Length: 364
Image 1 (spheres, helix red, strand yellow):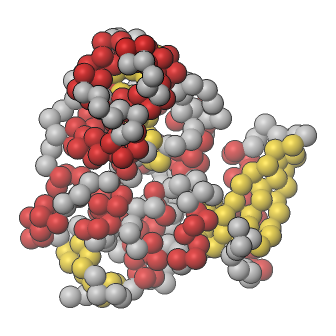
Image 2 (cartoon, one colour):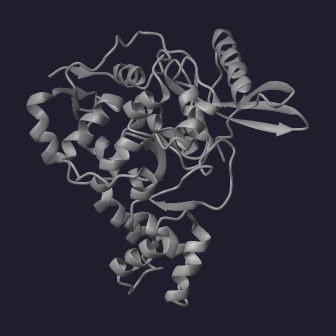
Image 3 (cartoon, rainbow, N blue to C red):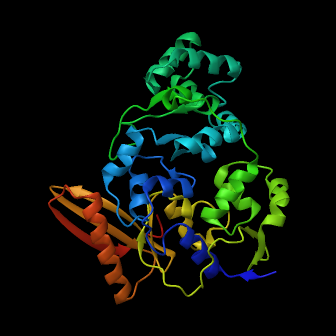
């Protein structure tokens, strides 16, 4: 059984994530290939596409949301994701058991003793064909169940019903009350029957492989995937990593030479490429994991070497790059060039741009 080193895994996943070379594919094609983009906040999906596409502008994604080609909803791990409308139709039913567990874990106290089927039915009737903000929905549900937390009731609906958060929610730098609409009304179609998990496993491997069974579970939030992976085994290639773990992959998926160069990339906050494996050593060392949970990562030679943010003040946008260790002069030049490109994309409205480098505060 072939051994794949940490660097080989890094290059394989980076290639599938379009991080070794930007792609000329369309934004919907990339969103579909990646099985969605992490979208806890409005801006990261835009940055995730910018870091992967050769030509991407802010209005490209906003238009896709307005046209209902792409939707924002609670999906993997109970977190907000942008996915294509077609993928949403089968992903939401497949993920429903996980989302029911998520609701119990996150908001079980708010709904203790309630009939959750009645809660879902009441929310469905109230939503009807309308777009309703989460606070309005929460207050309506609290009128039926006085004394209950309106936020907990409304947030529970995200796990109990297929609801979408339509634009302008989820668009660039947009903040405000989260709107809810029933998915079938927004899409104009009913949801598909839940497929077998094999479809999701293969899609995951195409974007994040090679990977273990636990990796697929960590990314999706689903459990008990060992059996469906074993059912797929005759159609997959099997490898081992340096720890002896069994890795599965699609036979024709790219696995570049470990020495293929990897350019500097400024990733979006909570980008799934740094979250989608239980063993994240293919992208970073353990001491760096806690930082990228809350901050956007920057990669050098394919691995997380720092975090970044943009500060705006008085017409000046400053890209603040905090590094875990010193970089070479060539690497600093590459960081500066890619950072300038990032500022032109994400802070075009600011009249002046600056880039600052400093060490990460490891004690924070």
